[in-house]
Length: 164
Length: 101
Image (cartoon, rainbow over all chains, first blue to last red):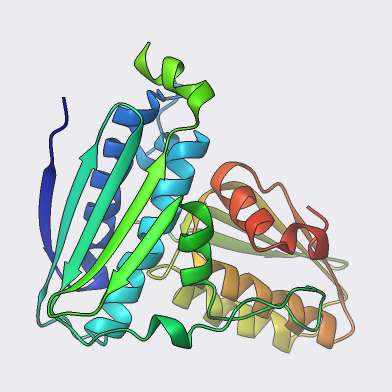
């Protein structure tokens, strides 16, 4: 069964954790990952949720896109919503993120240095690179509304595990 | 919410322990602490990431700032204990080699 989860949050960093939590739980529906140590819960259950490589990839990418929308589209001032549509299926997840803020110039993102050493360690501009690399596919269409589409497949060897 | 980090100053070492999530919401407070640490020109800094669960690019930027700041002041820095999602991020950015993780 493919069902879509819809969440709308104000376009501010204050609401980031709510959105990240929803995405992490949806990723777990696909990966089938469980809490590693249920006898020792910490104050933040999310800390247990993001261990599986699939969940790691999905959550890492989503966090960067949420940051990008709140900072660049809404300029840290809010003033609009971030509409999130999550569609987990048997072996993949699709996350669509829409906003009505300023369009982002994705072509303006510089690639990371090919040879990384102490000198070239970046102090910024890593977010889009992280999101893109963690996912199987990521597209951006300037709006309004601006639309980020994130796609991650569960590796074939893990589909059976995810269903057990 | 408790601060996601604490700093211990010993005579021969400054130890920074970061917990939970180091992200765009928690990194600014850490950045202030990092400025303070770097200003003391410490000879040796150890960053313990064993209790760090999640990191985003803002968190990575804060750690890079610390790394460069300490090295620039002639000090040595060790970043230890990264696991799970934070380790995956450092590997993706190929910082695991620079940081010796």
